[in-house]
Image (tube, rainbow, N blue to C red; front, side, top):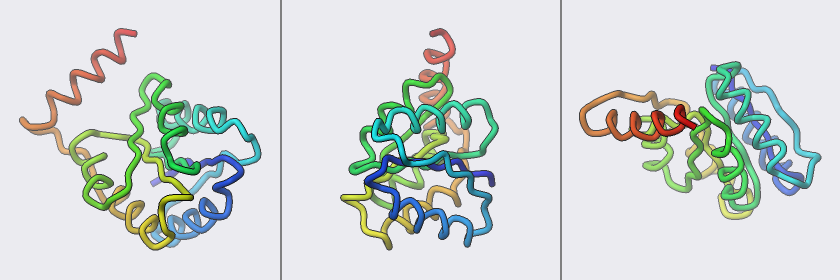
Amino acid sequence: MKIAIGCDPNAESFKQEMAEFIRGLGHEVTDFGSTDPIYAHVAIQVAEAVAAKKFDRGILFCGTGIGVMLAANKVKGAYAANVNNVYSARRACLSNNCNIITLGSQVTGNMLGKELIQAYLESSFVYNERSGKKVDAYVEYDNAR
């Protein structure tokens, strides 16, 4: 898969370690940077690229993962989830069709970060009776904006 990543300056070293891990899983990684202290700028760039289907998925990093999640979710067609456990990382894609996950460099250990990313990248959205109609509802709302 083609993965877009980005972060704020505080998460640079965490992002670099995670990027190497992602490459090691066999994915192509494009780094949208980390020099802008306004994390919304890089989050929006990644979200726009993922929503435009230039990338299969996106992964964003900041201190908690919350700020980049909020910024990414402002982009039409971007569906970002802040994940902090393996079950949520899987379900972000499997049940919710999220095309971006966010992680906090100050609240997520490096080993857990790798487990979260691997769980997310190994999952695929499965449209079914339980989840499909829920995803349809927010995509429909998003498309009507």
